[in-house]
Image (cartoon, rainbow, N blue to C red; front, side, top):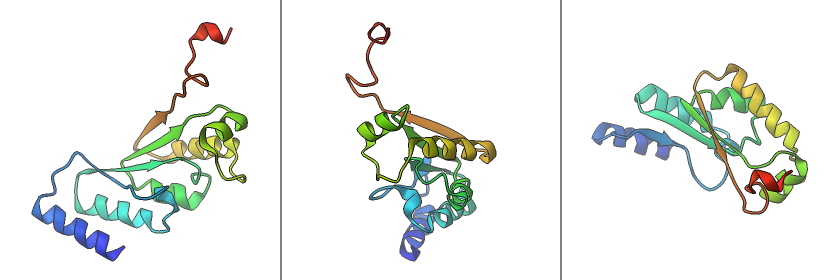
Length: 135
């Protein structure tokens, strides 16, 4: 954590030009216990917009919602409309429930003052068929 913040601070001093700084890595950024500290660092050291991409599965946690609120932009993913489609599209851990995912995103939206970008996945033959095929 310290080395990441040090490197980012050096970059900001040296050049520091970007439209966005996005938290990425291997997997879900909100699973890191100190992701909010990184967002706070970005917000305190620069005017560059901080972006947090998330699957949204952890937004059911109040602590995660509070830390995520330090971002300027939160990009959530949504690729399903019920538990069955959620399982098919995402293959989530057995304890993850679609209703909790949606409820967490709604709870986050209530207090979050920044932008929310929603990433919607379309899968041929599942959720991208012409409307006539649904009738």
